[in-house]
Structures are given as C-alpha cells and as structure tokens.
Image (tube, rainbow, N blue to C red):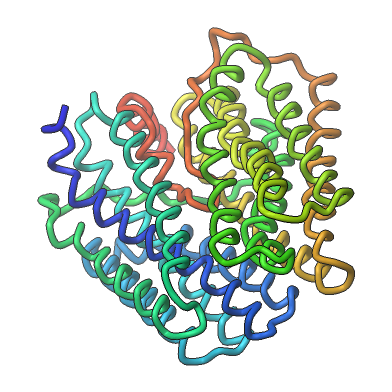
Length: 422
C-alpha cells in the first residue's frame, strides 16, 4: 500500500504546508483584529473578502494555468499568498486586511486546485478513492494544527504572520518534486443556475443557505469565543473542534444518507444545527465545556450538510455531468459565503455577539422548511440509482478540482466524453 503513496507524497506534503498556513492565517486575523479593536462588522468583512477571492480563484485559475502552465501559476499563487500575509502584519487596518484577505483567498484557491490537479494526474485509477481520503484527512489535520499553533506564542507581534508566510512558500515543494511535467488541464467551473435548478432545486436552495451559515460561523466563531471570555487556547480549540466534529459526523451521516432519502437526512442534521443555534442564543453558555459541547454539535451538523447536498444533486445528475454539477454548487456555496460573514458581522456589531447564531439559525430554518416542502413535491431517488456518498472537506476547503480528484476513473472519462460532445 505504501508504494502507491510514494509518487504523491511530495504533493500531499505540499498540500499540508498550504493548509497549515491557511489555518494560521484564518485564525490570526480575527484574533489579532479583535485585540486591535476592529468591529465585528469589519471582522465579518474579512470572511466576505476571503469568499470573493476564493470564488474568483476557482473561476480564473484554469485560464491562468492554460496560459502560463502549472508550475509558474502555482509559484505565483504561493508567493502572493505569502506576501499578502506579511502585508497584513505590516499594515494593521481593517480595509487593508479585507483586501489582502481577498487576495489570499484567490491565491489559496488557485494553489489548491493546482495541487489537486497534480494528485489526479499521479493517482493510479484503482487508488483514486484511497488517495482522495488520505488527502482529505491530511488537509484536515494540517488546518487544525495551524490553528492550534497560535497557542504556542504571542499573537500580538509579527511571529505568526511570518510563520504562515514561510509555510505558504514551503508549499512550493510539490511543484518542485512532482515527476509529472504536464498534468491534465484544470476543471473549469461555471455557474449555470438553470441547469442546476432543473437538476435539483433542493441542492441549489440549500447549498446557498448552508454557505451563508457555515461561512458566518467559520469567520466569526473566533470573535464570539474571545468575547465570551475564553482564553486563546480555548478560542483555537473552539474554532478547530467544529471542523473535526464535522469530519467525523460525515461517516454516520453518509451511511444513513445512502440508505434513505438524502433530503430527510439533510432536514435531520439541519434540525440538530438549529437546536445548537437556539441553545447558543438562549442559554448564552459561559466557560469552556458548555461552549465546546455546543460547538461540536453545531460543527458536526453544519459541516456534514455540504457533502449530503452534493450527493443528492449527483443522484439526479445525468451521466458525465457530476463534476460540473459539483463545481456549480461550490460557486453557489461561495455566493452564500460572501453574504454570511457580512450579515453576521453587522448583526454582532448592531445587537450582540449572540446575534451570530440568529443569522445561522435563520439559514437553517429556511433549509428545513424548503426541503420539507420539496419532499412533498418530488419522490425520492431509487436506492439503485443513488451515487455513493463521499466524505469531503467543507465547501470552504473544496475547489472544482476537488470533485475531479474524488471522482472515479469512469466518472472522469464520462465527464471528458460529455465535454467533447458539447
């Protein structure tokens, strides 16, 4: 088994460096910004800036790679991401950070797509699923490690900005060591709302509102935790625990969704998320343990929704379109990601820190109500026609290329034939 991973080890290592830097970057900004007195609204705009840049990176990177090649494009992405992080340490103002966060989101998405393209090219056909699983777990561990690194030093200085920039540069390792000189072209994502809606209205509606809730929580959870009175180590754990819980929850959720109507599973986990939202609002938990428990319940719910939605959409997709369907849903998720931190940041600024969970609760209520209505209007897919549920990173950690990496060789071939026919 080990020999199958030797050709992709350097790529997995480079991806872990990229995600490690992303974990540091994603947490140091809200923590440091809160200490600098930035408002919740401006800290929410950091999440909006990231989402705008990330979506633009997903759309524009295939064209950039086609013009200059994988190696040059990846080098530019990693270098600019490092520069943007160092720039954030030098220019400590909200609007500068928002712009630089958008630049970093663009570069991060592009670099991740290129690494995933290399992995797709290196993976043997019978090992794609296993390599995708390892890739997902490596990235999850790297993000968590990056976030927890902040507990080891003083966040008020230059240190963690420099460490993050160093690891962005170290992510250049996969392009330097990869034996593939000409990987396959990147998947080009496009947002065809009419096709997506015809394929699955539930997926279109739900993925947007899940993007709103997940991005709002992902961007502002550190701010909420710090203002609740948690120390830095607890803030980092409060931020990392939901991601870990979401990854673990995907295993039982996936098994369940393969055996029953995925829409009912989506309603069930949205209800669990709503209960956590309401408890955050009503009891205003104090101290580490109550906050950690509710964060784990919320994270286990919200970060398991996205793969259920994608699996449901792919159940209805015509052969040869599943990768494009997944890419389109990712862009919709990103659209929600632009709005979520913006609205939640304003709500926390105008009312109270707990208003974050009013925003997420509203999104979950909409998902539940609309999905229940659609269940009454359309019969479930037959068991025999279902695609297999696939454990996947949250939408914020996915790119259109992720769907291609996780697809089977038959699905990739069918997608290529469909594209050629069109």
